[in-house]
Image (tube, rainbow, N blue to C red; front, side, top):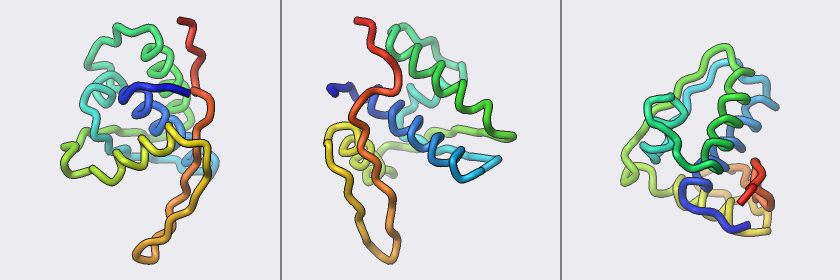
Length: 119
C-alpha cells in the first residue's frame, strides 16, 4: 500500500507495540525520530489529517495494554538505520531477516495499513 512518511512512522510504531504486547512486555519506552508523531501520540500536537487521527487512536488503544508507557523523540540524524527499516517495512511485500553483529532483528512487512483509509 502507498503511504507517506508519517503513516510509515505510525505503522512502525503500531507493529512495535503489537510485538511488545505479544511478548508480554508490561513497561515500554519508545524512541522515535519523528517529532511530529511523538508529539501527536503524547497529545501535545493536534492531528489535523483524518487518516493520521485513526493511526493515533489505534496507537492509544494499544498503549492501554501497558502498565507503563513512554515515548520520546530523538534526532533523525541519530536514528537513520531505524528510519530506513521503517520505510522498507512499509513498502515491500517480502519478509527478510538480517544478521549483523550477532543481532538478528525481526522484519515484518506490512501489506495492508493498520487503519482503514476512508478517502
